[in-house]
Image (cartoon, rainbow, N blue to C red; front, side, top):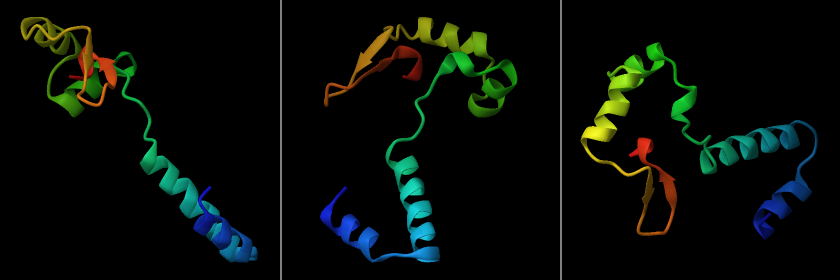
Length: 83
């Protein structure tokens, strides 16, 4: 927790404190969004989100020769299906 956040926290009481906590939770969700997991997608969700069927996305990955693991210039690793 930063010093400025700590000072805000120390000065708040009651409803202000509850609003502060709600804002902090929202900020945390923005900073750390849930990880993408292709396995959790069903056929309908794939069609809506990606305009492809789940099987077709896997075939596209193979056809485009996307490796199983990709690396960014910042050395972050992520599954090829995310690419």
